[in-house]
Amino acid sequence: MKHRYLVRRDPTQPNLRQVHLIQEELFALVAEHGHQVGPGDLGDNITTRGIDLLALPAGAVLRIGPEALIELTGLRNPCVQVDEFQDGLMALLRYRDSDGNIVRIGGVMAVVLSGGMVQPGDDISVELPPEPHTPLTYIVDSHHPNGTNAR
Image (cartoon, rainbow, N blue to C red):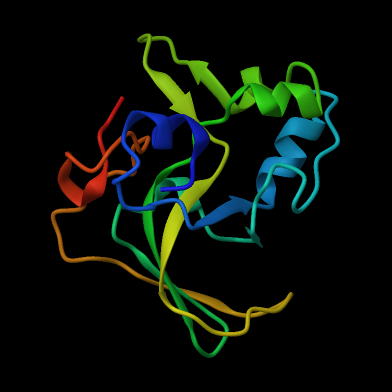
């Protein structure tokens, strides 16, 4: 576990946040609200295009380039550091819907299954896990199915 908040809670947890991915389409959305964000600005390791990352289920495997395999583990939970980057940005990336549920659109987290060279422009293919699919949730700890705890 490397996340500062979570390591204080339980340093023995597995690191389910090895890779942070953001879909490029998010940059256009926040630009509509006056924010200029690009690849890497929010700590993302990989920026995708044309893949609805937030709609993929937990356990989906992405093949990036010829060798790298990563497995999606959960949603990224934007924190105050996002507002330190650009004031007001966090409210766009984490908000409550009309039913009061927290919605997180700041990307997804993954673990590396198989390493390999990843380069700009690499193809990305998606392999879905067996059904029933479990929606991605915010990763809190390792006591929830798929190593996550919904909040």
